[in-house]
Image 1: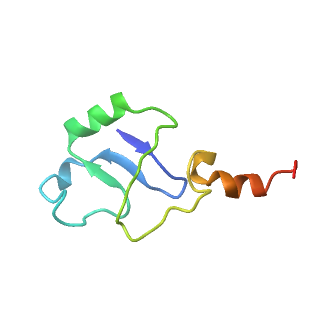
Image 2: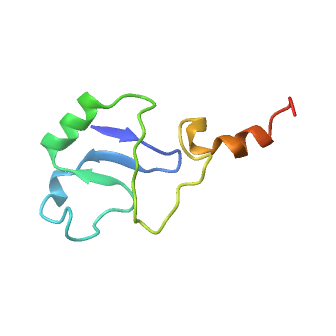
Amino acid sequence: MAVRISNSGEFVHSAPWSVADQGIRDVSHGCVNLPPDAAQWFYQTFGYGDVVDIRNTGVALRPTDGFGDWNIPWRTWTRGSALR
């Protein structure tokens, strides 16, 4: 199972092949690898639109690369309004 968190290919997914490395070595190409039981919990607990906050990767997700406008700060969003 996998949950996509960006349009460019970042996922949260089960990765039984990397359990021994998770939290120790970087063995992913951008995804959040989870042991199968944690992935099952994530899949059953979170829904569309829930925020996934990933920190300290050194790579910022572009504001328009996610699944909602919450990626763009309100002040920035309103600057593009046709009502201004």
